[in-house]
Structure formats: C-alpha cells, structure tokens
Length: 373
Image 1 (cartoon, rainbow, N blue to C red):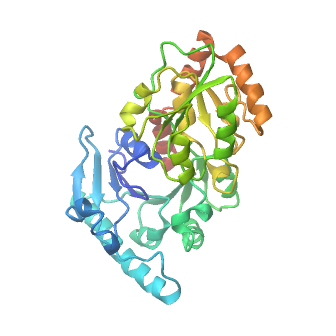
Image 2 (cartoon, rainbow, N blue to C red):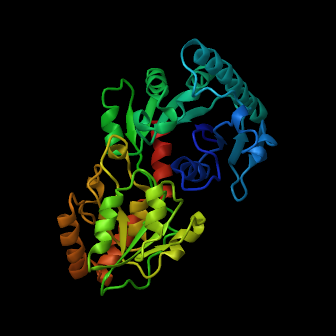
Image 3 (tube, rainbow, N blue to C red):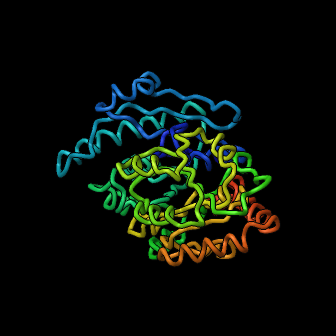
C-alpha cells in the first residue's frame, strides 16, 4: 500500500462550489488512502454551522470511495480578528487541538507514517510541522496576500510554513514564479475538469455569440467590461451560473440579455450549458487574479466552447485555443473572429479533446507523482 495522505484542507468537503482540493482528494484516493480534514469551525459559528457541531471529532467514509474519509475536527476559538499576544495564545491553543486530531487519525488507522498536505491552510501550520509526517507538502492555489479571510496573518504564517515544508505544489504558473526562490522543490499541478459533467455539446449556435459564465460572481469580475460586451450586436445572450456575491452581480443577473441559472449542483452545471458557444472569463487584472489558474477554462473547452477571456494571468497553456483580450476593441475583434473561424465542428471537437488531457484524474496522478518526488 502506498503511504496514506492526510490533507489539512482550507475548504469543507461537499461545500457549495468547486474545490480543487476536494477534486484532487477524490481522484488521489483511487491511488492511495486519503483523509480530508475539513477546515474547522469556531465558537462564533455554532449557530450557523449546527450540522457540523454535531459531527465534531468524527470520521466518515465518503460514499462511493473505498479509500477516502472526511474528518471533522474539534471546534476552535475565533482568532482572525486578534493581534499580538492574544492572537499568539489563541492560535497556539487551536493548533494544539488540531494536532491532537491528527494524532487521533493516525492512531485510528494504525498507520506508521503518512504524507501530510497542508492545502492553503497556514493557520494550522504549527500543528502540521509538529506532526512530523514522512513528508509535509504545502499545496497553494491562491495568492494568500490578496485573500480577504487571511489578510491579517496569512502572509506571515505562509512564510513560516514554507520555511519548514519539504515541497510545494502550486496550481498556476504565477504561483510557481512566486515561490521560485524557495529552497524546496516546487511542482506545478494545474486545476482540472470533470469530463463526466462537461461532455461536448452536440451542436453550438453559429449565427451569433451566446456566452456562458460559470462560477462565483464576485469581486474578481470586471462588471463594466461585461456591460460593454452585452451591448455588442454580435452578442445574443449570457448565461450565468453561480452565487451572486456583490451588488453589481445582482444588477447583472437582471440584465435583459442575461439568463441567470442560479446556483447549480456541480453535476448539473454542464448539462445546463446548452445553446451557448463561448465561455466567458471576465476577470479584472490584480494581485489576486494574476495567480489564478481558472477551473472553468477546461470546463468550457470540455463542452467544445470557444473562450473569451481577459488578460488577467498567464494562460500560455491554452494559447492554441484562447486569445486573451485587453480592451473592448480587442473583445469585439475576437468575438467576430470566433464567429467566423471557431464555431466549426472540427474546432469544437479539438477543444474537447484538448480538455480531456486536463481532467482531475490526470491532475491527481501528477499530484501523486509530486508527493513521491
């Protein structure tokens, strides 16, 4: 049996939205035993997270997986709003509690050694270091310095974790460049797609541009840009799927050319993207988005869609299929080009075949190799 993996996750397994950590864990569990440790709730969340309070310190096998368990850790003390000595004391208490949970896991399974992965979760870095796993890997998929939830302590805690880790796995070229001075190996494992949920469309409209956007409709979005795009005569409609997280998002969802599909289960998103031909990634360019490898780009290509994206990050992996735009004039030209050149059956199938090389199964195999590397 290959060494088991314990993933100290930032997200919560099964939560709303797509999580690269969860998808990697699912596919990795087909190769070796995996325990996914949910991000802990705190005392301030007792009312809003009642369902998780009841399952604290429990372990459950995930239905449909023989080697994947989810562990719900102990309830922690709130710490993000604290600073100085008070933060240090509370953080130490929380990490001791978290460490005891990790010890329970290894004792429960009677594992002699494990590989430990800290998935964008430096709040519990000291517990991970203290655990003394066979190897400690930091899995980073965002720029922590620009993450709202970790703005107070994230950068400092991440630097401490990186100084004590054995290797780093990142999800984008931008993040690999960020850690280029690290003294440990840095591996690139980009985000993937679920081929079963994003099968190729039988047919796509060819007479006008029918856009689709899947994902959180939040402060990453350039709303002014979308408003201008929707004014173009080439653009017939925009289908939106995902949570509305800003006032601008609510306004956009009511636009006359917008069909808001709401928040869809992951397995339903692909099938609702019918009668569209172009996936949209309208992100602003800033210190957060420049480190993103967008999950949705492979999903769009998997459906056979053309892609219109702003020039927010390094997307050279997709240069054969995607031409990032920098202005409204660029967008107009690109949409006209898509209408003339990219909506053929052969190009649709080529995009789909390309995306099949980027499934979560392939990404998990690469992640597995990185752990062993």
